[in-house]
Length: 464
Image (cartoon, rainbow, N blue to C red; front, side, top):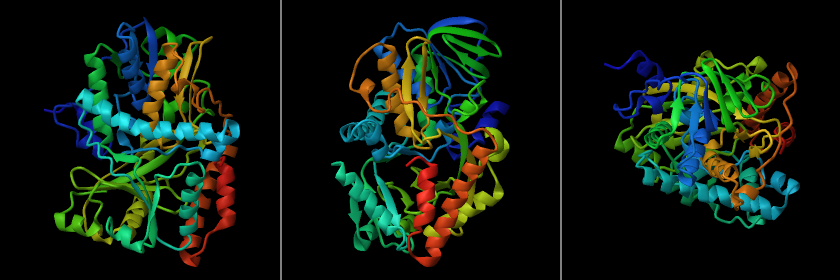
């Protein structure tokens, strides 16, 4: 019989609910008291677990402990949209401005190769996370979206990144039959995955190789060479903060990274006839050219999983399970899905879920290590973390082991984002950004031409 814990965690998302039955989703033992290790990692999500994985590969003698408040894969790592994409939250121009165009390209190409590294690593570890590299379609569904999508293709090409292509109406119709399609851009650099299978598989493989994951252990603060928890203190040569959207709950870090909620739902498994009508035969992930972020995928078991970032930011960077299923926002997400694929209008919605992602003030992710304090970090992915965490884990492993490699000199290493404004300023700014994105989309759908003024303000708010 499943334990109460198992039922609790299976209800987190579709991904947790469809894990193999042998994964009982029960908490591992908590921290037993004060301990000393070589590397302490706070957070058993992708960042923390990929870091531990590559550290274990680099030096099997290292004593590594991961400290997690709930269970491995509890947060965004287990609940995301399942895109192992090459997306970075900061634009190429932002990277080029602080470094160079060549360095911007080098970081982007490192992201491309990281997708394949996830495929390789999961195969070697025997983790079946339904990895399928089908690419991403960014559909144009009204004339106002076309200039942005074309501009993005030209912009990438100006950096010598020419893998992404334009599909006209005839070409896109061979891939999918979404409504109002005028064309789409296509990038091959994305794989659809089952997020919780990846997270839980990584955890199991680490435990099997001698990495201790202490679950049910709340961290109060991170300090030089020290992690203070409710169950004891962990001292370590290196302490890695891998807490992403939950960073604001740590002492002294409420303004470092803000939690922004992203919400998802999924249909029941669809019939072959329905899928023949929809397309997405290669499990292409999909979005469109609107300002508000939407994302979807055809799951390996034949569902349509779809999400968006229309949920409100909560005052004081508050995080609560109460924010994960707002009925009105989920209804809006469902209505958007049905507008794109009316074939699913009568399909049962079996799961609704959500959770916080992490955003820095300049929308810039980073990874780094302060050798003086022993404090390392990675994060600020703004929802684009599935692939970025793998690159972060490999980079942190090199930094911690003292190796100078191509990864340790990438442009995001050592980047420092300024803190968010105190309340109520950040509440006003983030809420304004969400409202602006939605109003710009509504205006464009109504007027059928780009909303330039609101788009310019959005770019300024997000640091682009």
